[in-house]
Length: 390
Figure 1 (cartoon, rainbow, N blue to C red):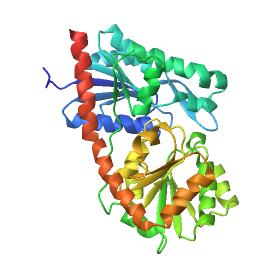
Figure 2 (cartoon, rainbow, N blue to C red):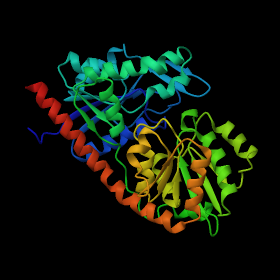
Figure 3 (cartoon, rainbow, N blue to C red):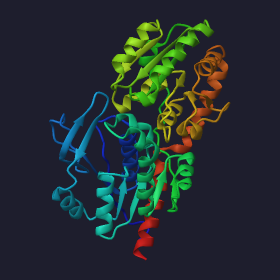
Figure 4 (cartoon, helix red, strand yellow):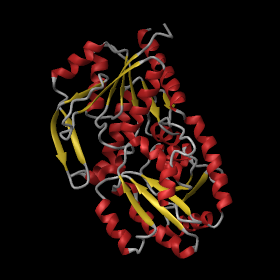
């Protein structure tokens, strides 16, 4: 029975066309599991802007109760009370449920698993307290107490928990989560050499360095800090460089204004949102990756950069702390403009060191392939299925 293909249901509150870490993680894990012969069905929102129906039979788009729009973020609120979700769930005959959020759709999937005697697992993707600024009310209370309580209670109710990085596992155990926790990073696709040649020719300065940063343009990604630090870099070194910022989001207009105000129009280029497969091409075109987000749990984009032969400079955060080995594949700094800028400037002045870090980064990323992630997930699924059957 151990080699029997599994039928896996995944429940998420956001998915493509929304661009973010959770949809990317689900897509990578699903791809890896399907390559091993398993079936994966994703229960996710039907977004208002989707005019054409999904052709993928393994994606179940669920109707919304409400699509709450704010200036910085839109919240699709699925109608979890609809009987169509349960009917589709039963029709497909799943073996295990995998929730990717501890509320709403995650809870819906968990309740269905419990009702029909199936094991339920959960991935702790996000430090939700870092997103409290998006809420209309109770921001402080949510940040300090509510978010942690929700995560602890939901994790304890599941059969097993996936943690993207070791620091996230430490966070869960420190809150009193006693269920089995497996550290499983989002898998990455290794980017072939030369994939970004067209972008390198277009953007790289002559006799200079091309830097890149990839993230949603939102407050928690800390791009305003990074722009100020890049301005300081230009004052610390005469080295020629350009920095590409790949991504879209609510901060785009304010970042465009900041680039002009700081006199960085010839240094920083905003690429905008691009399809996920194209992100790797921009990274491969670049010499080094720079990052300033303080909200990353797993640092998936750092793994992606390394899979494209980019070492990285980042500020300290959970994701970076587990991915970057100082002096081996990059460096971490405090959230301090002078410290971050000095580290980037020193690398611009030493291309040989930059290449050494990037070569090491590529070798490091090979440990976190999509295939390796799928194998780890499969072991956990079979373990919880066996325990519940027993």
